[in-house]
Image 1: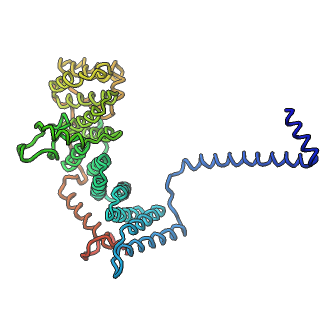
Image 2 (image 1 turned 180 degrees about the horizontal axis):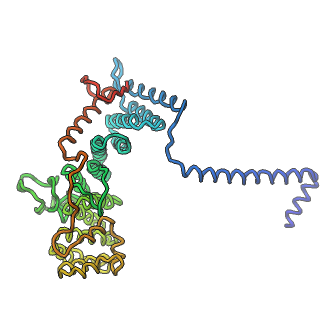
Image 3 (image 1 turned 45 degrees about the horizontal axis):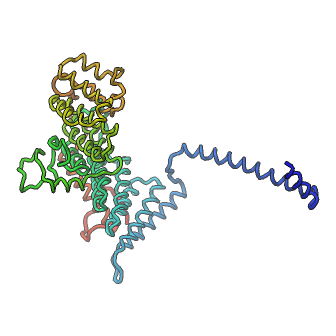
Length: 460
């Protein structure tokens, strides 16, 4: 305080009292202004956080942005043309198509943005930018899912776009992302407007979707490393030697050491890979495909065991395997796996999931319905283990019986088109032809001249 008084007295002696008052007044005003500005910016931030992330333009701003997108499209098409002294430039073409897609995004034009993102992805593939191409394909698939197209068209578009993204990620050697896109491609065939009843769909899973999803599971964990490879219902492992295995391959074969080493190198060990595979388990359970769900559960367990750490996630995976075996009515196999494999993990012995699995096996082996009800009581001693399970598996525990397989919902014919219907395949071919026509009009197709499609969309 003494220093401040001395400083003020020195200032007064040099500049007088007026200068001191002026300085003090100047020091106060900015503080008041800064306080007001801070409160305003805070309130603005709180208001904008509740608004949607993307806002579409309207009026003259939208018209100007549409013209800008058209200019980008024209530049992209010109960049892809072959001249007397020039060759097609896919780098510039992909960049201009991407800018056009972003402009259409601001205008709220879902279909035009989707088409230009596909065109941009095709250009990126032309010069080896596989990661960028995959991202564009995924964005186009998400746009198609949110579009107002028919359900059949959504299935066909999303399945193809996610499959193209998976191929691009494989070229980039990103096996984890490729497998995730393959799963999304299979899930796209299951797009439906029906709701689940008791955690399950009333319709059966199509074989095409099951084939894609099971292939995606193997892209994470090769079949030779999957303990439940024999429960795979479609397809043949990519690591099977057709010369040394029988033609009626069902998964019951023992690979040699060289094959095992090759499979270990192809296993996806990225972070949260098991969570992506868990989505396949839940989808299979929702459609009552317990064998395929157990096949996917074996892949999840293989990834967690390869880490070398015993965690709560591994305990849940073991418990899920037991529940899926009991759901198939095979209590003998469930008890065998529980004793010979699961209990060999010391940390699993003291887990809550181990107690739940043991109580379920004991109740079903003794054929005691009262004991089974006590074991799966949501308010009983196993309530914590049940709460940690996924809702689909928790609902499956409620359907377990002391004899036979778990209850399934009766299948009913679907009112809409299903994925394994021949008409869906024809729809996919029609979609491919339509996209080819559009790409030809945008300068990305072959030199063949085809008729215009029925959408009356002129991108030229």
